Image (cartoon, rainbow, N blue to C red; front, side):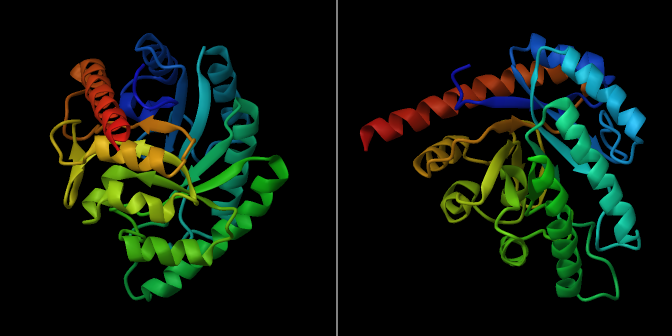
Length: 280
């Protein structure tokens, strides 16, 4: 691939397949790395609230594939809802153990559920930060990087100012997932803003978007991927990129072709970013 390496594909892109077929399809498309979806109600290739035995069974399937795991993208519950803190932490601990067993160096978690009524947003943000800081202790014991996806357009931390507030309340050891679609949907420029967050970013998610709309197949939004690649490169970022394509408003039947098209567009964007660097 001539896109900015390394590039993984998320199994969320193929959430309509069983895990084994999703992994095989991603490998057949030329990827060597995979992001595993563990999102409750959306993509449970890794069961986000699974038992130790169920998670171990999934880890066995993952290890049997040819793909290296770059991350587990998980929603095991949120600290700003009525779920008990201990329940959410227990699920996170099991997922951290899964990361060790499956060979994933990082666990990406959500930045809370959508804002809850009747509770001030700053209090909810504090609950999320406290829960993630507590989960970090177990992650560090296991040598797994704990990452929060912020901003996320549909969740509590849905703007850049809220993302800044959350990151300030977290231990610096909790890293950030920079999803360009959620940044763009929030009204911000994912390329222009990246340098401000580069020191904290562990992984970059790639999907197209418009203002207030993350559900765009590649090429039908207005994210400047060439600008993203140029900004990321100039910032010295060396972490992985994850292709995580829209799965709500585009047909599953053409998903493989959609991935091929996205790869072609990303190659072109990376080439334009490289030309821009050479001309500077």
